Image 1 (cartoon, rainbow, N blue to C red):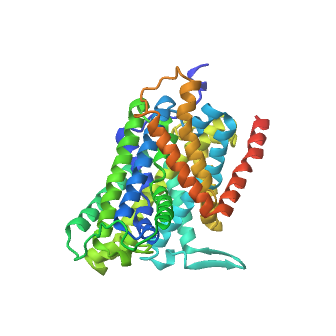
Image 2 (image 1 turned 60 degrees about the vertical axis):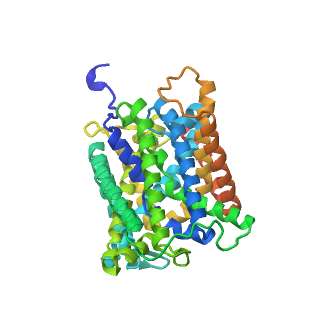
Image 3 (image 1 turned 60 degrees about the horizontal axis):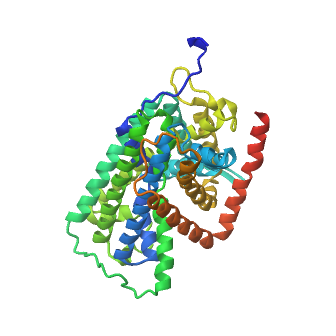
Amino acid sequence: MNEKTQPVKLKRQLGLFDSSMMVIGIVIGSGIFMTTGLMAEAIPSASLILLAWVLGGLQMLAGALTYAELGAAMPKAGGQYVFLREAYGQLPGFLFGWIAFVAYISGTNAALAIAVADHVGSFYPSLSTQNIIIDVGSFSISGGQIFALSLILILSIINYLGIVFGKWIQNIFTVLKIGSILLFALAGLFISTGNHIDMSLNTTNMSIGSILTGMGIALVAVNWTVGGWEYITFAAGEIKNPKRNLPLALIIGTVTILTLYFLVNIAYLKVLPMDSLIGEIKVGEMTARSLYGPGIGGLFVLVIIVSMFGALNGNILVGSRVYYAMAKDHLFFSKAADVHPKFHTPGNAIIIQGFWAACLTLTGTFEELITLVVFVNFMLWIASASTVFVLRKKQPDLDRPYKVWGYPYVPAFFIIFSSAIMVNTFFKSPEQSLIGLGLTLLGIPAFWYWKKKK
């Protein structure tokens, strides 16, 4: 085969800094500015809230260390899809990619874009989802939806034109995000507000059962806020020296996130009395207003916009690599396997992903889809982590330049802890969990369709 007919491949253009920024930028979206108020409703105790963050943080770190071994051993586009395929076969891998495309990643992209639009709408009301511009029967489109659609389109084009453009946007917005959050957290720690953190374990005399139930609810919220650290493995095929840089990026990224989250939560608890914190959705904004006053505090919305914009860009960049990997195995639209000859990006996979996210944005079904697949996402998350055990037995000679610290205890802790939260999620929302399972099983006929087509 001569040089001209050689297939175009993805290029390794992500360094350690780029990959670390990707981890941080994707994880830190809007959750950290909202979650603590919901946690306070379940466990109205500063010490229990901080304990939930510590436990969730340890779970996140254990998961990152586990995925680091898998990613370094198999540094290919697709991440979890590849892990599941190699350990359990094509169907489990496909079901992960199916639910990611149909609901989880695409739905998250739509949700982030709409959330950015709503926050921009606080400055320009015409761009809010409250501003209906098309209303036909039960179907309506708002200015916010059009803005969100445009945002998905622009970021998809940027990432289509080259991973260099996508990574620079990611790096710039993540650095801004880290700086803003750090400044905000330190201000909360050092500016006196007259409020003091009550570290009593059970200030409201909750029963042991209520504490355990509340902790379960709080940990689900923590998991929602820290989720996404594993997405960097989707782009493993484009990381330079992945055997070294992928594990380091996961470790650097997760430790940075945990540090920022812990500092921010101490700031929340120091600035806001527990009575004000309970049930408050806009915790970050409320804390900023308490620190700086209504005028300057209102500008905190810009920090949230920057944070969500960076998370959306990262999702668009890495998510498309899953569908590219599936298409390479003839388990997705065949055109998604093409790499652009000039830009070296999975351009068609980016287009297909953007189109579906745009559809979810316009139909407004993304929230329902994300809610339905939370349980399934936990299940696939755990299944992917379990492949570290399976592959050590199945492929003992596989080159593992990094082996998870504390094996087998660290992966086991991640799996057991995540399983407990998954079970709690099921009992909290059994109907939604079962529907999510049904949606996942719909992927089986899709799998056989592509398998037969191959």
